[in-house]
Amino acid sequence: MVEVKKIITPLTDEVIETLRAGDKVLISGWVYTARDAAHKRMLEDYEKTGQLPFDVKGQVIYYVGPTPAKPGQVIGSAGPTTAYRMDKYTPKLLELGLKGTIGKGWRGPEVKEALKKYKAVYFAAYGGTAALLSKHITKVEMVSYEDLGPEAIRKLYFEDFPVIVANDIYGGDVFEEGQKKYRKLVI
Amino acid sequence: MREIHYNDVVKVVKDMVMDAEYRLPEDFIQAVKLSVEKEESPLGREILQEILKNAEVAEKEQVAYCQDTGYPVFFVEVGQDVKIIGGSLRDAINEGVRLATKEGYLRASLAYDPLFDRKNTADNTPALIYFDIVPGDKIKIMFAAKGGGSENQSKQAMLKPADGIEGVKKFILQSIANAGPNACPPFTVGVGIGGTFDYSAVLAKKALFRHIGERHPDPRIAKLEEELLELANQLGVGPLGFGGTTTVIDIKIEIAPCHIASLPVAVNIQCHAARHKEIEI
Image 1 (spheres, one colour):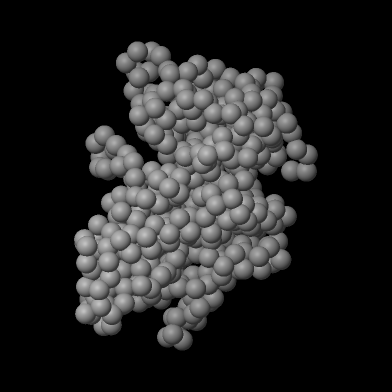
Image 2: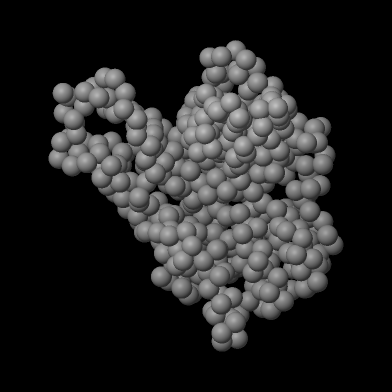
């Protein structure tokens, strides 16, 4: 966890293979936002039309619903939301070529398996540090589902956005491994 | 009868909501500062520093501490010698929330209905308001911005009287361990024991308003709070769940009489965005 890796989106298999649970990573480039409502609608649209609102191949989705930008800001506060709520939809998106997701908290077993199978990574950003994280977002564009307000799909341009590899393609889990080290009480 | 105008309530609520969203309570900040020195995990210490830095930036720039600006929850104690003129008290509180959302650039985080189209109400109303009538001619307004991430990890159980103190302790510690990284630790934990199914949860939420380090007046409960705090920090969850010795900043327990057949327990998890504020008019 000493070395900080810098990666640029879109991500390739070669980059994914170098990432291990616990690695600190700075992400730059475009990423897409989507949370509960956008995931539900995206996958419903895919069922009906065979199309997604954007091509997920090689891309990264950030689970975030930012606050509105104040005058002079690019974006409001923009920290990660809890990732497991998207677990139902994630394996399909990984199958379609999505290479990374950013959120906070644990992923379920189906997602962890899908990360291995389709070569993708789940990154954890520091939950609740939304005022700080927004400083690493330098451009915002609306992509789709604008009627969803804070849950609309937007494109964000990251500059050295700080995350930790939470689940890698080798089965590593930063939360399990980290907590095991300090657990003195099993309940 | 002392008269308080609708417009005055609107202004007070608007200001208190915005301030709570931008500035964490001082007692919480001080407690996090102390925990930096005690935290054993290097990554944990780094995260606690980031949390403090985030609090500084949010206050300095007057922006939301967290993008989840929460479900607005109010406990309002209305003195029985107060009369509200110019409109209803409930409407005044909702108008204050509406204005704070707009002028304070808060995220609209409520859905009209939980099951069907889940359309956003767009202004964070209706707020959840618990009213109480008390003696006197003042109104006390307590506000919490309750984020979804930690609320989702909260738990309630109807234990058996035979489960006793050990059963209650186990349930509380399990709830904290299960909340883990999903609910953004370090937590403050509000616990309600007794009452009915619903009232235990209300007590748990209200308990979160007590200051950090302030123990329950009943020494038996105070001892239980201290014991649970120590045990919770042995669970290994750590700051943001990456492992460590700072899982819980404080545990506050409230109790109420209950049915002879029951032992209700509710655990309301509060993330590090511990946005609580009180004002008296």
